[in-house]
Image (cartoon, rainbow, N blue to C red):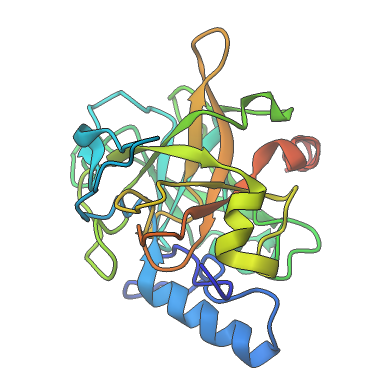
Length: 288
């Protein structure tokens, strides 16, 4: 995540197109530098690559042992989770709308090429709900730097709980949950089962020490342990970062966006700050 590293998108499978990975490379370099970073990110990261790296406890904040490298989520634990066929994750914003990352899609318009899989933690389960897309709306003005959100309209509603999004910064603190079917280690294979992990909030100032000008404060939020070891990775792009609100319900505060490799010491994960775009997302969803 130093020179706008690669986005956390899974390499394309047969028949799918490689979407601009999670901010692969540094965002603000020259055009060549950005492409290099993007490719690097695309090859190296993607989803909740809850990297399997041993953690060394820190005196101030040690990663909870149970989630080192990520643990398998229980069926029904996060019913709003969605796996997208281009190799990204997402969350049900509405029964027929998936919120994901802008770098996971190619522009806006009618699109029936994406398949959303929901309702299961095991992607090979016979109970999986599979629905095709009808439209895609990529964040207006998205150019690879910030504004990393997109909406996918589904052909039919999915009968699963949705995940509400944060509309203020009130929940941009504490510990967050990340989940996805991405790699469990940098450069590793995608997962059959949904993995989950806990990562702590990292301030803009702290994150800028790692990424400098590549970070867009106000549009992005960071999370991760100083010593690394737990993170999202390739294939997790577009998935939600969430926590409990004051009522005990889950609320989404981030969208998996980019980072330097996966779970590397000194390089937290970078997520789209959902509250910043909550009004834009709501308006866009109402028009799909």
